[in-house]
Length: 114
Length: 115
Image (cartoon, rainbow over all chains, first blue to last red; front, top):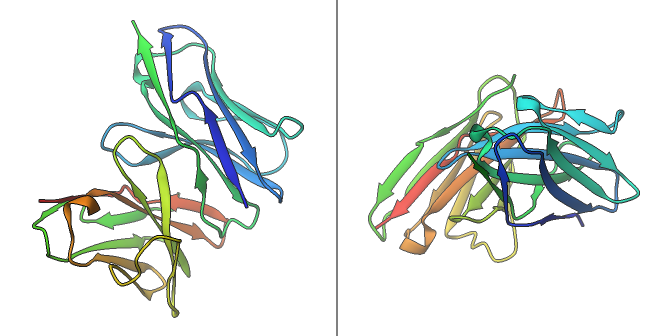
């Protein structure tokens, strides 16, 4: 079984400050890991994903995440927050087959203060 | 990249009526599709797995007689909410894995409001 824990249901940062959204996972098989962003009343947009290879993954909009197997973590970061980053962020895990459903964390709402 | 569409994007219906939601993979074939439900300010929860040519498999606590799933072809899965009630109001999202790339693609979601 797989599971995802996102620490902090709400994170608030100042514009220009570092964004750090935490994600820890549990998986009995090598995981595929994902970060999605969801704006109000919209669907999911894939930010980035880790499958195999380089553990530091760069995504869209300046976001990146690092897969740390020893810590079972996949934290999402962005050096400088922008007002447009305010949204709900979901971390998700699946197995390596690519043909199984994603298991989502509860989500973290990011607020950016001017 | 591959695209998954959903129709309708938004639907409002009266309590007791049935609503059909379509999920289509536009440029790839999907023998499997997944249906998720997202209540306000909550995460996505898997409802069921739709399998082309066979019965859908439902997650624990999801009523198969209420949420009818039909995977009619390799590019289309439908979710019918039967005898809808206000508590069924939610955001329904489908996803489909592209067997060529092993990537999953999400539809834009359908907002169901039951009055």
